[in-house]
Image (cartoon, rainbow, N blue to C red; front, side, top):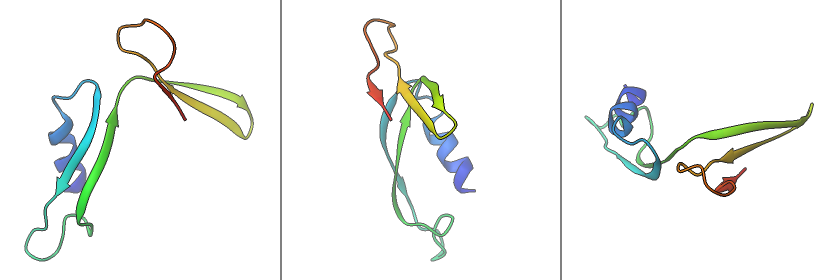
Length: 71
């Protein structure tokens, strides 16, 4: 139920970041959590440096310049 709520909320977002409010229903919470859920939707490139090293680069949607964010 929680996954469906999140997917429906970000369905129209192609690129961006934001916060989804998680509403409590019937005192049970939404998936056992309350508050807000942060999301980031973008195109990422995965680079594996070695067996225990990898990086994710968020690419600029217009294709110009380098990565916008690296993790």
